[in-house]
Length: 235
Picture 1 (cartoon, rainbow, N blue to C red):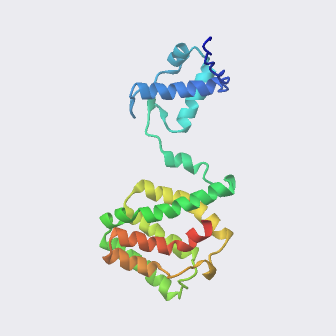
Picture 2 (cartoon, rainbow, N blue to C red; picture 1 turned 90 degrees about the vertical axis):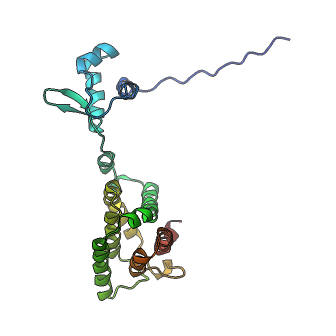
C-alpha cells in the first residue's frame, strides 16, 4: 500500500508593505548587532544599497523608528541609537476619546492593580517628610467632613498621587499621570455611591496609619479593601 504523503498547507501571502518589511529588518539589524544607545546607525544611502529599495522607502521606515524614539539625528554624527521613551509613546494614544469602552475598563483596572502592587516600594522608600505630607492631605479631608463611604475623585487623586510619588519609581509615577485621564473618565461615568460599598470601609486615614506602623502585606490588604468599591463596579 502506498504511503500517504503529508501535504503542507499553502502559506498565506505576505501582506506587509515594503516599508513594513524594511522597518522590521532595521529593528532586526539593531538586535542582531547588539547595538545600544549612542551607537551609530547606518546612513540612508548605505541602507538603500544593502536593502535594494528606494530612498523613499528607507526614509519612511527610518521615520517610524525616529517617531518611536529608537533612533535620532545628531549633528556631525548622523543617525544614532537612542533610549526609547515608551511612556511618551503611550501618551500619544491614551486619550479616553480615542479608546473603546473595553480598553478604558481594562486600563482602569490596571491602575487599581498598580495601587495594590506598590506596597513594597512604599515601605522601602517612605520618609518622614512623605508621611507628614500625607498627614496634611488627610487632615484637610477630615476638616471638610468628607463622607468616607463616598469616593471623592479630587481627594482620591491627591492622596493616591502622593503615594505614587513616595514609591520612588519614576516610571510608575509617569504611568500614573498617564492613566489619570482614564481614571477620571471612567470614574465620572458612574459616580461611586454608598451602594457600591460592601462591608467595612478603609479610608485614607486607615491607609496612612497602616503605612506608619504596618507592613507591606497589611498595607496591600488594606488597599484592596479601600479599592473594593472600584473593583466591585468593574468586576
